[in-house]
Image (cartoon, rainbow, N blue to C red; front, side, top):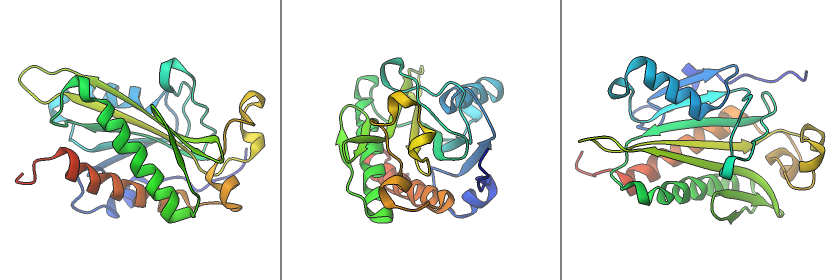
Length: 210
């Protein structure tokens, strides 16, 4: 297996002082999906004790999910696979606002950090050169007498080569490295993206007086 520089939770968290998104970061070597991992943490610790803005990364997902139950391929150490637990003040029927927020932030960071020109393909994909480079999966749960809980799952192809994708996806998927022509620092990209997500989340979904 090709070696890679693993993500380090403490280093990521230290780069995000005073953030809501990223105030607590966990990096797992492997999990079924990062959305499932956050659900397990919430079940074990009790949902009220799980901080808003918890981020869980996984170096590999064995059962990553996309929209409509599609499988998300997540080659070990080649991408960014993570989920965020949030309590936005929105209705369940407005969960699409979170998807648009996330794909807008991903697109902006791809543009500014890598110089590629992404295109948004609704409902939840980001493409480069007509091929999928990132996707978002939002799962919301109603809570009694409390803000609804949202788990925002994000997958970004970062350093895959064409051969890292299954044959049936090689003409449909692309990575940042393939588009950029060289490997991308996953840690640096993750920090910039989490900062962007944090700033825009505060603007769109949080009471400025809090």
